[in-house]
Length: 462
Image (tube, rainbow, N blue to C red; front, side, top):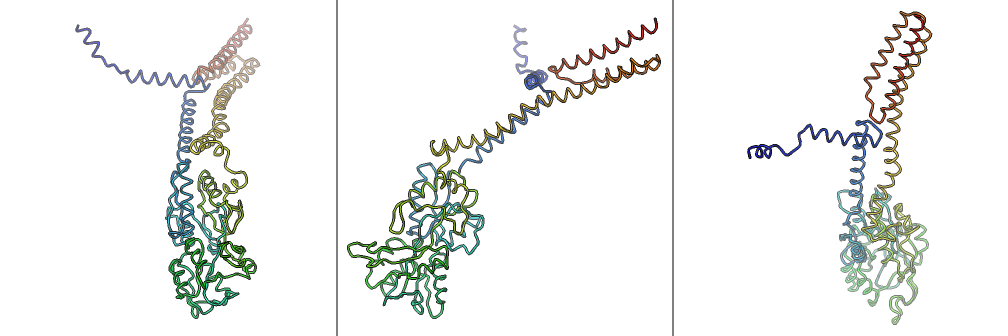
């Protein structure tokens, strides 16, 4: 019983020496499989582990974010309405789109340019950048944005006819106000004699119907469809006809000529009673550089669904389009317009396509770079061992020639000491077991030279 108790009290864990021998044995097995020394094998294992860690880090880091933020427009505007449509479509793929209200294109642009603002994409009206685009790219133009100028009183033909009147040109920060100021200045209308009001669209339209203001400038980024529809049906309110539309587009290339057909608003009441020429910029979907390609595809796919239909001012399939105005078209958007979604996203569910595409990005470098490097390590090590061995073979060959040609016995003894030195140096070489054949061949040849010199010396004495 005492014997049993003493045995059971022995430590069950292997000793540190045993653990080191086990680890050493494993490393030796890896070294033999690679055809390299334990040090080289350890370096190879470390390299592979680092490569694997880098691959895992890339797989995690390069995953498309599940939440992005879009800066849209004022509450109730077409920009905000479209933003919620984008959010509904992206939700199908498990991506949450946060829609932020804003005062309009100028504020959207400021948010996108300011890295402190956590905004990824936004709607920006053409012509509001003033040449400063920052680190931004365009995913394409989404739609025409007509400028609608409603006024009271006798019909006017030129925009200069609004001089000296009370004009509601939109709130600060809106593309409507920016464009209105540009067009009015072109017609020689400046603040002073003419009153500029920065009222909201709903307030301005009500004031126009009441006669408090003489004209209002409206665009979809700030005004709701209901506000514009009410003004189109309001009595004694006229929609300005830009008879100089072509001239405006020549002066400002970001503007397009748009035609509102006769009866386009109300066929029964024949509103408008005549075809009306309008002008307006396009709306671009602007993103910060670095937007994930998968999200770029999703946003453009949503844009096709939302903006690709026939409307009063555009043909089916006209938008979205790779029309470049203020911002360069991103490489991912250009690829989408040319060939559609990337291969995996075309045939696989979004989450699976994202995973597979990232695996491919990791796998290709592994095939092209990592695997050849690992496969070349044994060859490089064998070359190194052979180079060390050949150095001693070279010394042995030169020494053999000198010994065979040397007649002086004392001098031959001196050369034999050099042979001893070579043999000592070779015996101290650290050679892996799988290169043992080369090592023992060298030692055998050293012995062969020693025996050959001994035989020659024996013949000389006889």
